[in-house]
Length: 329
Ligand code: PBG
Image 1 (cartoon, rainbow, N blue to C red):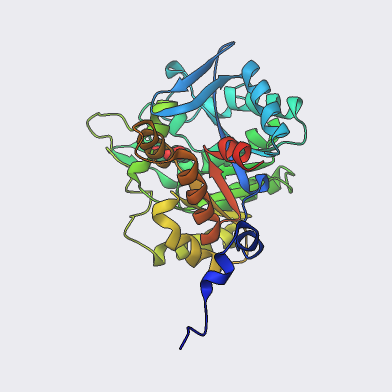
Image 2 (tube, helix red, strand yellow):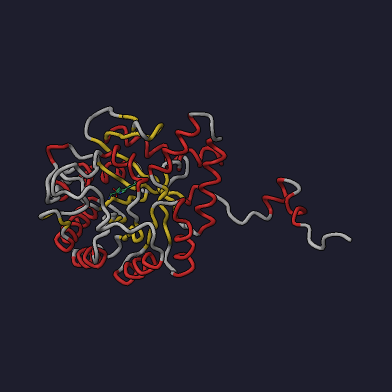
């Protein structure tokens, strides 16, 4: 007697393993998040995100040149807004000469073919650290969407290729799409954070931008009235379907690892490209464990990225983008 099927035959050497490998990571898979600050000559490490930095515009130029050389052709921009420019209306977000608008132009002038996506949400601009305008403790939905649409126009004017609304207001995709069409930005795309969960994994990101909800009376301590409940799955599909109907070109699931069941479900369900955001807390976890010598950083990193792609991601937004590409090239 012998086993009729011996799966191990396909595992006997690296040559056969690579021949039958179903998921291959390439530089084309990645979208690189970049944090931008005011100033000159600034490259500051984010304490809870070892080896990840905020750049002033001059040093951002070097960084995007390096990314391009590595074959990383898409960036997602976030700005750290000075405290004195924050309010409850997103006024600075619409400043044609604001940091985001200048950052877009800087990237485009430095590497014209780099795809530039921009974060569209009010939290970096909010004195309360929320993604929308607040009135009596409530995040106003439709009023916020209107500002996000204006913000999108402003980013498109500065040269953004895609806007990426990360706020989770209802109906903001159609509001943004209509505004873009009205202004003639037919080819400006929308990557919607469609299934964005109210996750505790965003902590280090909020450190990076100093954008955490403030501890004040009448200000919600968390984002659970707009971001999704981690317990829900059907709702994620509904969110994605609505965003596609409203005009989203790309839909996103966020965070990554804990939500790969959602990623596969959505990938099986829709025909538009699916993006996954491997968020700051996921990055921090691995860095911390590796620092202690408890995990093999590079091996775990590759395993995680492979898992995200295998789950169905067409696009992976990851703070590991550069590390991964250096490792595999
Ligand atoms: C906010 C925003 C967040 C992230 C991207 N956009 C944080 C939040 O919702 O509080 C998180 C990204 C990360 O953790 O890496 N609009």
